[in-house]
Length: 425
Image (tube, rainbow, N blue to C red; front, side, top):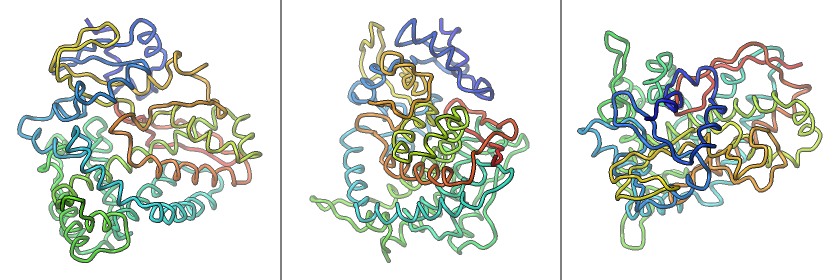
């Protein structure tokens, strides 16, 4: 049972692209499909839009905390710490931390960051000519944005690039041991880098989902959190660390460390893949590309369609807390339940002509930012970054066209592009 769906779990499948044809066939047969898991107990893949929404909005039945949110089970000794991350919590713990964080993202702070993002996008893209790697040239934008949010010195921002590479490197060896931080970093960064693990004889790094696997990140986050509490600046995280809620509660240093892990990895990796994915969509539909150059009012809708059509994060896991039923399928307490966004976002029941890239699609109820209590806190900043980059692309004197084969990330989790060679026509 589950062998026909096995390719959707295999990271090698994604080296040639998301298997949309297979997902469509599986989705046509049933909303929920069992998938065998080498070295694990297997899981239920949720493939349709309505059922994905139901799982995400029902944390009492489908828990983020019980087994965390990745398909592969954390090591027993790592699970307790993994559960302290906001991503892996259920209400009320999740609600408390999310509420504090939401208050830190004030409209004034978001507006200021948005203006900076537009300027960075113009600087990164505006001068590009000839032939270049679009994925490489735009990789700095999410790092600059995250550094602004956290008040991280600009010289240290490439540490976040390294950390996110290591987290996804368990499936792509090229990323597993990357190190790109330059020599001109702060003393805080130098102290953290001294703790950076080195690959073992087989080239493998320790599990990045554990505190022991990312000692340099946690050392940096600890020092940064203490600094924000002792001498707050004007950045979002200084506001967070200074805030005291109605009952006298505040974010602990340990919680700040885990938020830093989450933002450094999720906030960087998702946009780093979503931005070149959006350009792939434009290059695949040159008439739409030209229409956007002529009419920028289409850009907000185009960004939403890029998020749906490319779907940067392809799945997230929950664990059933009780015996239940989903679309007529019995699910036992303790079973893994994995919502497959790259399938739900092309569900024919929710989207007309789902494989087409249609910037006028309305409504566009894609699930790329999730749904329910875990709806992505960074959705606004992600949209601002995508709009800024694509606006800068549309300002270029001509169209970007492929200049070679893209190199895809070996991952069943991130719909990623490591390299995207293009040229300005």
